[in-house]
Length: 177
Image (tube, rainbow, N blue to C red; front, side, top):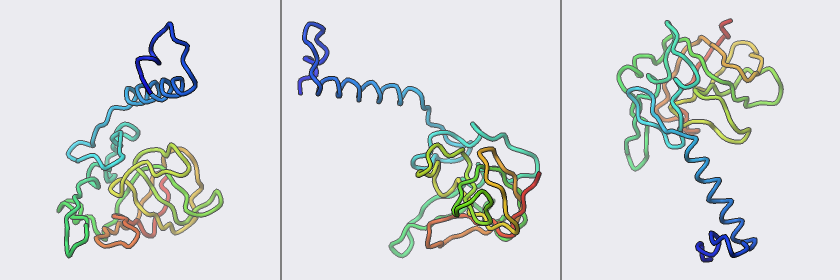
């Protein structure tokens, strides 16, 4: 299809030209609305468009997402595995506090097992970030699902070889009000 014909004002655009123009317009608007940034001291994960600090302010006593983002993939025995910074490894099996947004893994408004992510979900079928910006939560008691950020405390597990590709799990988690 000749794009110059689509842009010629004397020529009445055909359906194919209108579709092409609409697609180009959507692409240009979408690209101008998003500014990719990585958390301070981290490399942006594939698909991560905004730093967690765009949504959550760091709180004293809480483990910041920028710390959990300090992980790189390295090839070991023919497989890609996470290689965590010493600061992250030091958190393994330690009590931590984290804040993020819930993604339910079960049906219902109360969840004992869910994902906590650094950025609010924008789609029911999409994860808003890579594995360095999500934590599998295994709560002691049910946590009510909502769209607002939740604060949790529990024991952090740093996972170097999780079959689901997760990097972090928070066990015995309880909600902090």
